[in-house]
Image 1 (cartoon, rainbow, N blue to C red):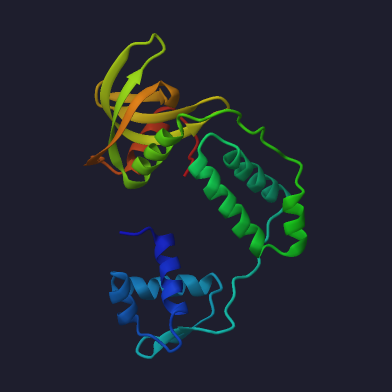
Image 2 (cartoon, one colour):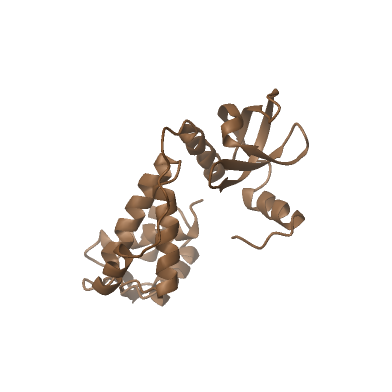
Length: 231
């Protein structure tokens, strides 16, 4: 089932495609959810400012003058946003870099001009990484495993150079200054372990799903280490 945020975006797109009112039942069938979920999502969109007219039994329609309100950020929020995006753009993961560039462009496009100019001139930078990034493909595979909640097979070389093989349940990826690390439940050690990406000799995405939701594994790991709630 799609995440709620994705479902809300899909519902907005379904309304944008239509010039006439559409019934909640038709929207429910198109999106593969219950009628009750459609009504709840419509109420959520209205509370967020979407210009939706209609009611059950009559149909729903997005008003022609609908537009997304300009995004507003405080100076500190804008600095945090820009620094985070620049960190990805100049980081080791080329796929995430391209995504961050797209996200930055989309945000800038809907900002008021004064804030857009401020965003472009913020004096916070990340030093670009030099040279090739052989871990690029590995990071893409691991991010997919996290999204799809699938198990991963690793051939891993530890600090002493010993090579071992194992299946892990990915929990989180950490992007550090000079390396990246996967946090995962290791079926070989029967415990949570951290694996440096540059120590992975081979990585295969398996068809087997995680035995538990990744969120459950993440909270168990973070709670055991008394980490702050990151979700």
